[in-house]
Length: 194
Image (cartoon, rainbow, N blue to C red; front, side, top):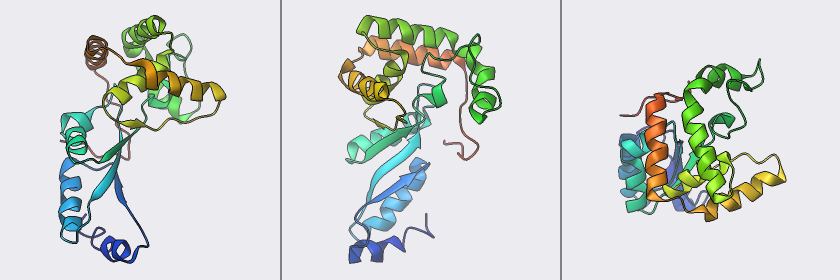
């Protein structure tokens, strides 16, 4: 932070860049970047971190609260955990062998079964898919989910998720089941957040 943040200030002052966002940053790193930028009248305006039902350090370490309190957009990536939270894959129907997704997720699919079954049940009650529920959960947390779109139906799902309105009880139930799965989906590129 101390090395790359100061060179942004002349670019901001000159108009070459208009906004600063960070990715895969801890609360401490965001605060440091904000302090450095703040001395020149600028601030971090966006955070992009891995955030899903299975991976919530950004919530637990106060980053989401900070973003809400300071009008900072939080972009959540891997909301669907590479498809593991879409309901498409299960121990009987694993991700395609030989892919990096299969290597990371096929071994944990049995642990996800209770969670994805509950997501499917909530989806059925709302006329939505399991993937819609994962996305609706991220939206309910105040994030902007980044979802890969490869089919027109994915756009329909995002619209459904936006309008879904999960209840506090449904959110708590999903989080309890996600915690009970006891899975760490932190990527190799991500440092542990404390």
